[in-house]
Length: 370
Length: 150
Image (cartoon, rainbow over all chains, first blue to last red; front, top):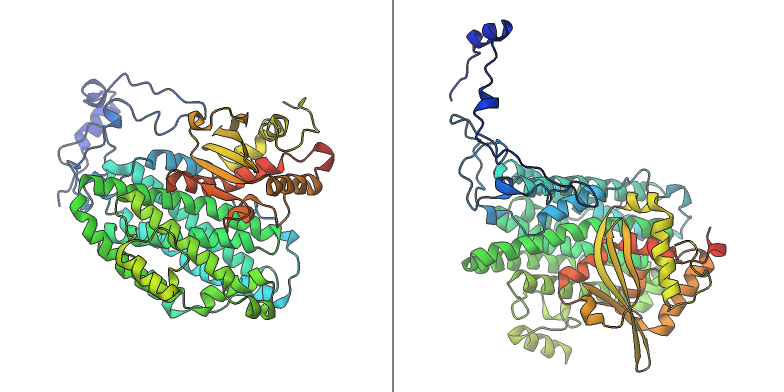
């Protein structure tokens, strides 16, 4: 490692008023740039102009130097391992970052906690169990980007900044569901190994590609649908607001994940098979989640209005949620450029309400339906 | 904006005018919710008749809210469609409670695909309906006639 010693000669000259001014006279970065604010303020897109808006396909250095600055030749190597733009970029990442910053909310201030009504104990249990699962799963979507952020080259700073907003979003989701579980006489419920298995799969992903596909596309897509279901089934306006606010954040993350994968595959279609492999693995665990009582039964009880009613209605509410989850997930896969209508590996029994299936998958589902 | 007729029923330009006025009259709430960019169509089906109303969210404002003569030209990112009975029931519920009750929020009415359904050319458009869920609900709640507001 090169050590840079203090330049005492310069220090003494500067003390005498002999300024260097090399940074002022000889700076090789672009001068004369004047970004104009748009109607909502000065956005990342507004400043993405001239040489500053040029994001290299492959980062020429591995440094924290701001992209577009005049960089010393002897800057240290930061050891970034993600140095290709397509590994993290998406066409919507600039606007998603701005939106994320603009739409932050507070789990302390923006939820009318004092208006929580007392619930039937079965419903309170169900809501608390749902909140336990959500409080558990949400933080992985902070841990995963945090684990990879320091490996992403600084030239892709907008993508890194977006991932930072995701970390904050997920911290707030963990917070709000923990608060809801503790706010109304219930408390936290059961944490299941199968849920942790999926989180471990995301966290242990060997590449950002793998983890992003599992988390942004599959995991967060499913959680987005769970938030929609949570709003649908919420026993009071308090939970309604919680789920709507979380839904907004989660949809941003899914929008990044879908468009990132699309960007990645457009530049290297040969990666499609790798991504299919990641999702095959992920779907296997998702199938296990769909057969975990602690995950599926709370929504059934909330939908039915109690345990006794839920036993009569069976799993009809959970089936609606699952059908939506899978269909929306498969649509996003197709939009990303890797359709899985004929490849989804979930058991046929779980696909009976999913339209658009093709090939062998459709045939297997038809057999089950008969 | 505030001078719009307060008695226009759903579906009408007056009703959607009240929706746009909600953002105009309470900029603090909408600034706090954050900016949004969305072109949404509300499709009201009455037998063979279909009326379509466009809503354009731009920044913190509602740039347009009213009936469309050409929905294709409007180029919606998402469409919420359903029978006029369901839409009217939602609007009346908002009026009665000063905002939608638990059974009549936009997400509640669209989640199962009945009575309302979200349609989009691609999933990114559909997901925008979720990305701005709280903004949209606050706007729709804002159509409650003034006397009904809490």
